Length: 477
Image 1 (tube, rainbow, N blue to C red):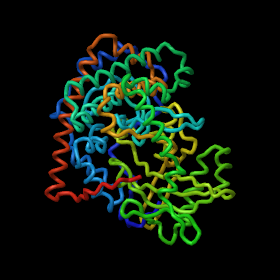
Image 2 (tube, rainbow, N blue to C red):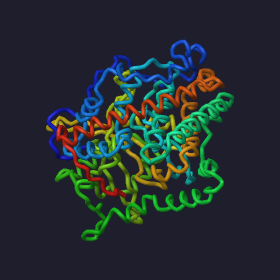
Image 3 (cartoon, one colour):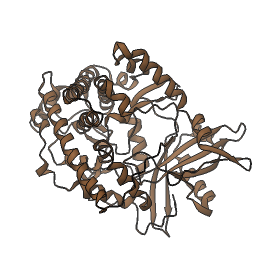
Image 4 (cartoon, rainbow, N blue to C red):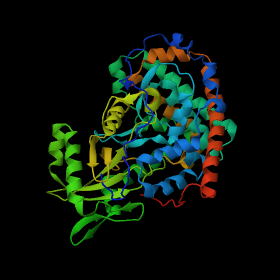
């Protein structure tokens, strides 16, 4: 999609990829879980050696700038330099390279790719019930199950330190997350596969993970936030009437109209390709809507710089608004280590991975693309509904009940991996003793230390002006 910043080179990333094409993870592991212990001993999972990582983390971060909008890079650098936690959120590429520098079990699943603890949340399913699940799939790709597990558990320690949680409680939270992953993986290994796919973690189960003292408080908080986080509420906040027509309000540079005089044609072309990715019944539904406006939007931390557009549709009969987010998708950060995705369109890669992992997926997800030969732009996008009862956790809310929340996330991650991978092989590899648990606690703490060092490197580069940065961080609705 053309956002008129005049990028002089192709924005389709060309990393040093392995020649293989990544297919879906095998439904059954080719060997036993015990055999995988010969590839990576369970104690070895706890090892972290910074001298063998084989890359410079700052350069790995900067290398991602090639596919991003140049005018947004200072915002990305500023947000990542804010704290070790915001750095971790934006540094999936750094950890991908680090994980790839170590041996892996070869037990493959459809990885989320960025399973950090705040990438779990609630939203309303197509059946209109609140579901707790993974919520970010930009980096999804088939890969070793323990890579997702390590990124999740290390994030527990990073978040704990960011919120003043004592180290002992942080480690207890890592144990809680790991134990629930292992417990539920063992359960899934004994279930018929179709029952694994039907399984969901609803809001009632999430509340059960809360302590008895704050069960009611958590339940009320979830209900209150879910009612506020809807597309209709967002439309009231983010749009205004101009000459009798509803338009999205600007908040430069975080929300701006950037499509210029060709906006109507660009939206027509992009939306037509999106409709082609949908099943016929949804295509029919959306024929009842008109696309009336679109703005470029700044979202998240790691996503800053990727072109994201908030698009307003209105039902022709009632004027009911529908907000869709169109988000640029590049190659997964794991592709250069595991092989390129089998999906030519990276938006398609994200959507198919999401459907493989999630228990219930937004019915409006799809993909599209945009090309502009004059600017040498060739961009992939995925599309999803903007807000829909989404309740995204905040660190300061999670921190007081970190162990309980980590346990809930461990449950969800086990279910996600059991859908695409061999739950029996994972269970056999993990075993019933504490070897993997102790290894994961050691790794999570060691990698949190590494993350602090890497953040300091970026913060120094920002402070001395080596890389451009804007520290502004508005309250984006």
